[in-house]
Length: 454
Image 1 (cartoon, rainbow, N blue to C red):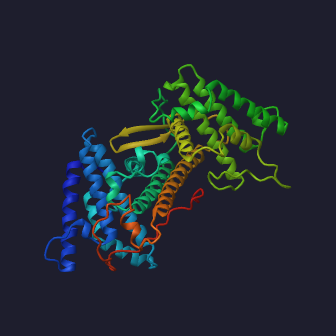
Image 2: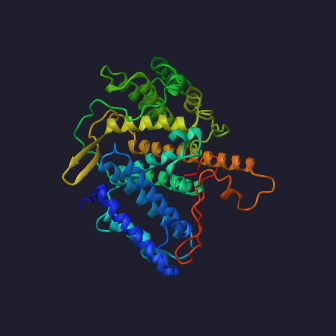
Image 3: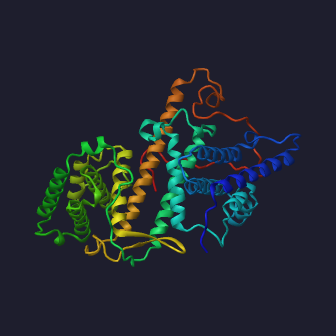
């Protein structure tokens, strides 16, 4: 059964109806004379519904978006809130049966299922989930100044009706959901795709300042050639294929990408985009080597040398070439995303059938002749790196805000200080008492300020 999206107008009408029911339930539970506002709900439920109503109103105002584009984003928002509800239940210390009962009794969770027409028998595919989470993540970039985490959290955006730390938790969850759904969709693909890639349109180019700093396309190709020669000389091997299996596959992968990008038709890609794609592939290889040495994702440490290990020439050369120790996580994400998009374009087909959209690996693609290459591993590593970059950037922004607030705090600050005069990122709704039967203590901690463990 194909999971069909409702049009945006229907979603809006049905969601608003469910919110009224939730407010009426609150009125009954509290014995209130008048219907409460969303702002009067217990904090957690208040924040979840405010998030959804704000996303809804923002989408309604974006006249340039088509109905199905708005629906895709709002489905992502609803699924994100459902995951937030489930995450909070998981912190209760109760057994799985009790958690499931509470989830089924959650009026907001069941209401969202009805709005989406989602059930065990009628659920989105992993490919659809990937689209939903990707689009809500793109939408939520507005929490950053000019939608750029390099510039920190914005002090003025529509979602600031929710406390910024709650927004950070939701963003954290959404990044992980996108990675998980994409990995699941890759795992479902077969290798029977029959089409060949056509000219490529880059979805989002890496920043010009970044690609300019990395040098010209011709210089980058020469640097890679020198790196490969150094590895062969160090290992005393005449050819790349004579190197260790892991290193041989990795260097053949980089050579194949370089050769493909150098072809006369260029796949519709300019030199700056080629630089971004190849350096992104270099980051993938560098990270794969770090995995071999059991190093944490995207940490700045060198691979240790000792009696049993002399380190890795390729890793060290790539670190220097890429300036990897000082590069921002935002730039690393942009480069790895460029590489990921190119690999997928060359190796994966996306076709529309009566049952919906499907993706499969092409039976033959530019990487097919590399013996021992696990392309799925490369794609999954790219997803992990992108998620880790986002998490680290988010954590840095949150830490910067906390430090700035702490520095601005009066010496005789009261305990309510952060939720009043200096709470830049939240237009605080009126407070309500926590409903012990419905609301759960939040333990969704952000990752440490060092590279997140994933």
